[in-house]
Length: 592
Image (tube, rainbow, N blue to C red; front, side, top):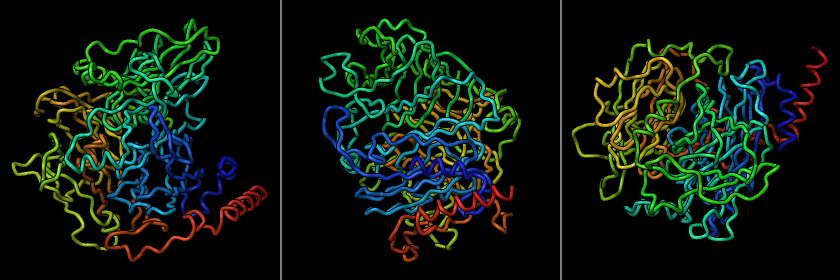
């Protein structure tokens, strides 16, 4: 695969010859095979979801505006979809990888080739399975979008790049976790926290049994590293810190931040951060890397702590002693809220284009649509435990929404999602938001649940303009940050509190809004925004349905049995495909 990736870079300017590429931008190809392997991250052998035989999966590194082709092969024993958290999929929700927009990749070795452009994006993201709670078993990896060389970054180039994937972890399989939820049970306390798929360093012989493999990150003294951290866990907010080292925050989910030093940062489920960390210590010993649970009883949750090792090349010994302290009070949501609101956008830095990120004055735009999405603890609906927004627990339609539109499948979904909580019993429904193309929407997330929640929006980034406690009222708008609020795709909502976001709806398609906490998501705490350009009679603002689209539900008869991978179907064979690229490259070289 590495040689194929190198090859497509060399022939970047011939992308216009192929239907899966956009304009003449470069493109890059990846192959991801999803399968089960046996691993023991917490010392207990269990089945995990591997990508190309690895847990976590490989890092996918691309460049701004590249066309990305990812051939996914499903060797699991159940259907699969892969979603790309934070990648906006401009004009092509067909590639988003969630059940409302894609038919799942069937089991039994089926392929699906994702084809999308990372249009005008930079930053740190991740990919992961989106169905059947498979992310609780793995299948995730880092997805990095680097700047084009002509666009300066707002800090000195680092000496290296480090990816750290953290998350709470259960030794029960994702299928067992699913069954527990189906049976009306809570998931309970996780069995631990993993760092890059490995369990904790044995910093405490009582809490950590012997024989667990831990993560070690090797660094050189005096160098500065770009450290990208993703929380891909099930439901636990984690406080991330590196003993005796400052974390200079520079980017989150595709946007550069005002540069501030932190000793630790709360990273909620689904969130990604980039820090610059300078190796400025004397290396008298190794240093702890810690990801510990937040907003829970630490007496009970002591073992839910991830610990890795930062190893200087001139280290004089192993790390020993107590872990670096977390914030003073694990229940202190005021501290956490203040930290969250201290994360501001760097409005003078260029993002993916050579213009300041702050040139879009979102605070001066009139709001055209308003939604108050309220969540409460899971409730019983028709004898089943369900989670809701505004009293509606979402049931995925049998036919993905946009396919239903294209082929006139009636009754697949409803465009009647309420703008605020309704005074009626909760229900299971396929109600979605009928959003306005090029509208400017305000969404207030009211969390009346008992746990911290993460809220995610596909297809967009939103401005996190406000957070607070209690019930949101219109008077809270006076506290909104209307100048340099961070733009991101995943935000936290504290229990008994609210978070307000603003977003410009300029990306046509059908886009998922969800709780990123896997238990709440699985139980139905999600919906979709349907954004269609009513004036687009020639279908120029949305990409057409891809030739390799999968069909299911009312359209299942349209799906042909797959004999070879999608990538092979497009060109006959990968060898022929790359031969054609070489020939075309040579021809263009001769005439240029």
